[in-house]
Length: 253
Image 1 (cartoon, one colour):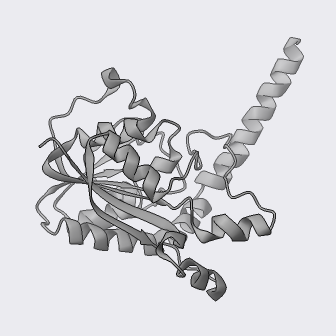
Image 2 (cartoon, helix red, strand yellow):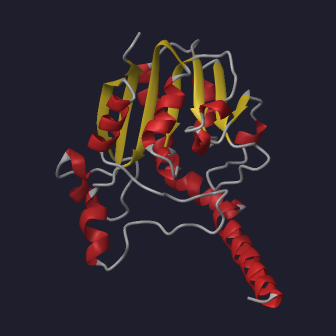
């Protein structure tokens, strides 16, 4: 391959990345994400308050979104964990979150397999909110669950929410329409899509291998269906619902 072909490919990749960055990380993307996930944010806060009602505890929110702002309204001590804030430009970002002066722990969860890269922090947390993030990681679930559980206090709770891989729309509707239920890999890797979605059983079994016990589990519809037909299908049985909620506590305390 000659240098001209390399230059042509490089220019093409840069163009495609810029286009995708605009579509997935721009102001309009943030607005759409906020609007479509607003119900999920508020339902997640309800679950947090049910599991951890004390407003004085230390809370860690993995990633930043409008959910972070809601957590900061309910709890006095909220930290965030995720990519460098100057590089985290995902569509989940919301302009009001940037005004929050919350302490931040910079760490890419995809580095969880390498314990030498784990951040050196003294804090432990009574509630860690790992919401709609695990499906964006390209590592085995055991790695991120083990890292986050290492930050739990003695009675701390790790709350995980994720899309349900077995939801009825993915099982049936999309396939009947000839649509792929799985997202494509993105060119703009700083804001990845879903690498893999999980079932309740898969996440529970992965947690057990990490010496975590399930203290709460629920199938839930985080997203309001615009078509009543879809809503009816999702409510035929719990495992048809669009999302999974699991809360864990460390076993060896």
